[in-house]
Image (tube, rainbow, N blue to C red; front, side):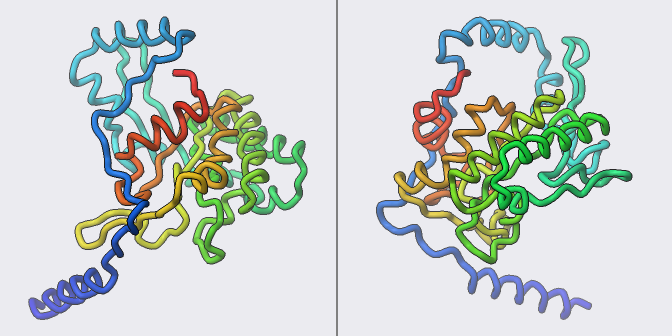
Length: 274
């Protein structure tokens, strides 16, 4: 038994060594920066931020932790579940997959894949698909729909989740995202555009003790003109939330790239309110 365990560990270690991530080429490295940028820099949202700051100041540490940490996957009725702060009027939120319909439920619809909807080039049909998805999520009691997906864009033909998006053309993908967001949110469900950004393969996209997550090394112009475009149109359509990718982009993990959020996308380039 012990020998089997040791053999398994040695195999894992060997695999980790063989699959060690290659260094990021010079000119592509973007170091992480702290702290995260502050919101509320647009005057139209100053009053909203004032109210939010007053609310948070009145919350206990336990209430703040309950809202921001969640309750864990499969620890509630959805794949993602926040805690609640009922004393200040904030209920629990249900976040549920996926881009093709409601996951882990009965009597649900398997909607046509995003790549199939995109292939129609029919804007009205894509919008009505979003409406139907939103209706079903609302009917199941979901607050936040974890879709649509525009990352991966489809750089790799063998990418495991290319079919969730609308196609590798950034304009087509952008229209698919925007129309889907509008349709879903017309039903009172918050849409989530994902995965921001460069999530072009499933293998090694997550970090673990034996393997670093893959780094998508993308120059600034390509990032703006191809990968960012669909997210930009989703934001302009009023998407309620965005999901950060697991992978790294030009070395640091997506969630640690201040420049990515502050300069590259959701700040100066898209002029997002808030």
